Length: 118
Image (cartoon, rainbow, N blue to C red):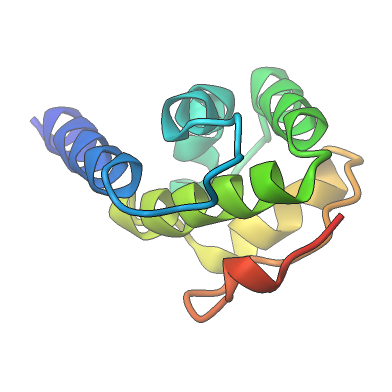
């Protein structure tokens, strides 16, 4: 039952993010962000071993956000998704190092995605 509720909340958050104004020229969607990070959800909720598929998704998402508008759009999506799945911010911020990816920001509920640049 819990996984159904989490999926429902995530889908509602994605709908809200997709249907609100964002960077007009961004090619990345919240759906693709969620697809990339979905293997990480269990880890950022509970910790443990980071699945290889999670790191693959983090690397893929990083590769898709080489342009500033895509980076800002992905950040906006992540700011909606992360709290909706009950993620631990410290585990979220530790993923980059564990996956050997250099990200240009750390997650925070107060992060201003519009200030991010590549």
